[in-house]
Length: 490
Image (cartoon, rainbow, N blue to C red; front, side, top):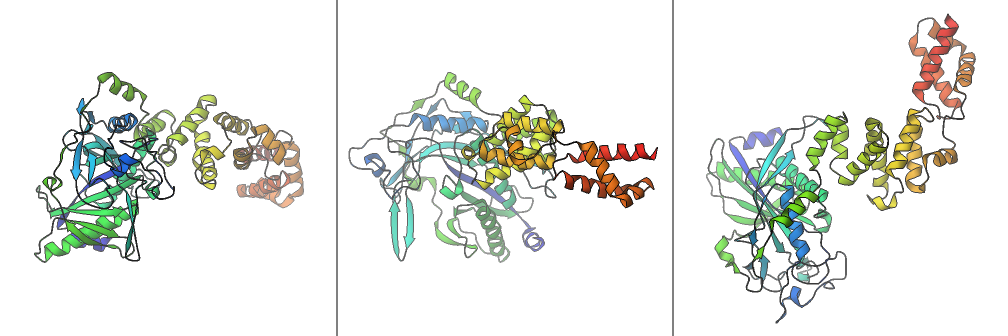
């Protein structure tokens, strides 16, 4: 990293993102064909998707609403009149030889996305910045090409799927900032249920524009677009390598070509694809089959009122209202489902710190064990609240509560039933009797404690926990032992 900074310090990187997000809809952007993933190739198509003669597009209302929701999450201005254009190009993944998109009148204009840069150390909050958005527009996706053994296979199942293209301003200055921006965009849209944003399934894809300029200059350099970036790690590596590549050319007094390059993750480098097209090369013109759309203020306000709290706003509220540390809020808030579960439990039983610890550590581990599928877990917020209350009453230890929680997640039992089945719980333990036994059986440790060696109590505590099979609450064991030892001393 130090060598990388040394070789690029005379230049400043300027980075912008074009993020394509598949919108959560049942059917495609301009046809009744279903949106699907994992089906047999070319099974989710119809005459509109395939561009057959006489097939006319019909706008998907839900796709428009989802695009508006996305814009409102980022504070974009929603256009009252929006329209569609044809982007003309010849390529096998587009059966019509054009793509329906928005060039002149996008649905959303402007806006910002809040990002958090990596902290100086793990679990340390980093700097927050706002990255400007240029626009968010609605368009249709293209098919998927697979190249094998000198042949190209085309699957049109993805063609026609509604996309929101989110275009940032060139406000990013490093690969880390670009990665943070992508993470934030994914959080915002997942919170609003606009898109699952699963990059492995192609539901979120990113093109990156990179240029270099002399440090301190305000002019933009010649930009290069990087494609085939299907993960956040690929975005990081591709930007870093492109900065190095352009830096070598500029230091040798060479010329940067305005071009599109394909990223090769295996070779960790990019290859030139074609000279970068200008807007007029696509011969945009208004789509004659789709009239302009007028959006009413009442509709926009209704969608605005339905939006969830933004992730970083929620994180700040948790820190302010519940007194939770960053180590917990940074786990709870990126997932809307996890945050909602936490808040529902806190409304039932007011111990935010204990509930947050169980949710952020133990519940999240159980969710991961079932592949992130919430529906397979049978734990309710009410059950979690009861479990924390049982710990506070001294009926079981914090360690035992983790075992009970794991059992409840898969059995659907209430805390009392799970504790009884597992033989865990302190209600049937005569703690004082067991502590007296431990003191009597561990003469040496007892004498050392009474002689001033405070650490000797640990041997007694270990004996008590062994006798109770870990069911006793450690703080209660400590308090009981000290009370009995000090009483005997007196």
